[in-house]
Image (cartoon, rainbow, N blue to C red; front, side):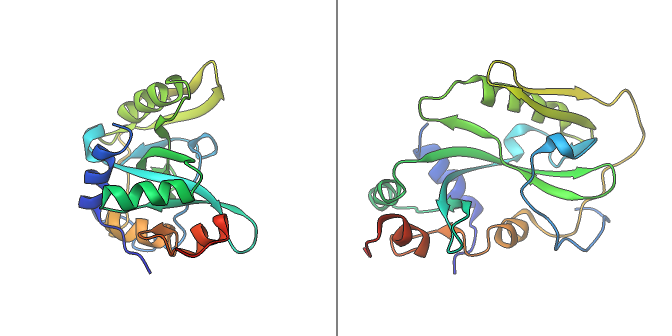
Length: 196
């Protein structure tokens, strides 16, 4: 079973396409779109504090499409993994968020995709920068012509409360058994019908 490695994620991201005293119970952290999360804040001081990852969407054993992290250090092997994933690859930011009511969630906006408009990534980065450093924002996907629309809270002293879990622990929990490190990951075998 794969474990997330932040250093490999940073290295792979560069090579590919270009806690406080908060609540301790973090078992419910999921990937969510921020549009339904009310006011929320983003963990980190700058966008450089966030982790870039390479992802693909593949089917799980129940026939549901799921997001998988690809974390392969060797470039030649990584290319083979991309091929087995039908080159359906995105570079995303892992954005750790907490809403006004203390619910933590991960937002995974695409920041680089093959052949798609740059509007989605540009508008996502703008929203992320607005929500960093304890600032509260709302953010919704409008359309392919508008992208992510975001706005700042008019003013509050409320501080975000984060769980004590590390980013790596949360990523391991959220992507349990969905971190691809080799060609023999079951999701790749399901996708191609071929063992390596």
